Length: 521
Picture 1 (cartoon, rainbow, N blue to C red):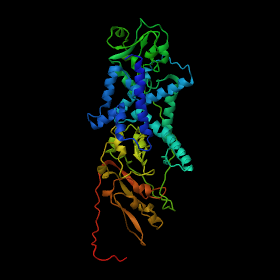
Picture 2: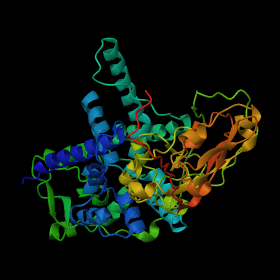
Picture 3: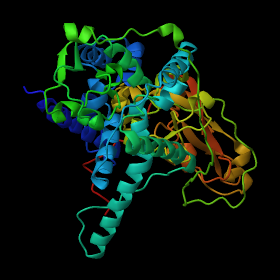
Picture 4: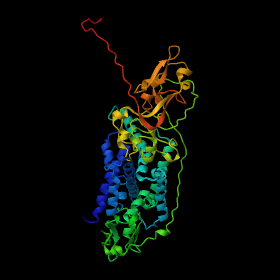
């Protein structure tokens, strides 16, 4: 294979990964199979590490393949597998199309900044928090950008097209309910997307070589790569073409050196060199060894620089309209623990493994899984939770347990999920309209799939809810259906550790029928 062909191969592979992973997050119709999800998320570096640590199963070693590839060829992961990196390439490509003469230049290595963003998440991880991993992980940020920026736009266009077709009596597609987009959820992915867009338009992959901890870590590993791109000094005429197309800004044409730990292996330089001055060679070649400089690690100083802002909080809620509360409820509700998704085992397991990629949020058909604000504490911000103001957990659904790439939500069979107790329903009598307004309701009991909520006699032929916690699975159907505002009369208190609920026995009514007797009609 000619060296110039490597770029074509890289482009094909990167497009396959980019389109496939993008489709996972934009699949609002749940068309794609969870198996399809696993194929393309398997090699995502941070989720793969966390899943392997949590499950300790040899089948979840995608990150090992990434390390092997990096040791062999360099940062191929950044150029072909990482969806955020490919998104930057797409933005850079569009920039070149708009501005015909878009050239790159050699950049400073920014070593202090790069290693600071690598050390900071590792320090927090050492103390048991993956907060900064969640904020900086490229795959998770790509997921949040798609879920909260691109997917709502796609659904809006879908519904607009559906409305036009319906007006013309064409019913090929039906409208899709747009999930609730909260202001504070949009701010972070919007700010992050704006940042990488600005960096990409200015200098290609500068984000990957200044902020991204995965890029920095793989860059350190690539120092030991078996094959490296190098400049053949005897053939180089200093034409500057390779430096102009290097999106990593790692080619120094004056000294005829390539900073390979910043190279993302885009292979652009291999396609433009007119004199065969760029080689992809075995690292122990004597030419290459003569050009490698020793790095004085003692001079490196690490500076922790963090900027994070969250502003604006507006929530949109919906409730059943069959029964309307006339009087506002007065007893406020304070939940000790949030409710984590089924398959997450416990709050500790979930918060230590979840990278907040929001693939479960995007895949949830009932949209009950929503990003948290401060429910898990500041360090757990953006990690998904069950928001029963938005919806409730579908009794016959396990999609979220099948798509999680980091092992924060483990696969669970539907039969087991139906008995997994995420939390327990709590009844607040003083908020119930049966008590406050002396009127019929029973919405909570009607929607309870396990019959943990029953209506018992009250006064004046009225009935009032009674909760049997041992049968409750914490699906939130009762809380969502309760019409009382602003504080619900029934709510789900999350279990710190998921438990197993009892299965309620259904009493069968035996009625003897005399088939020989004539029907009375």
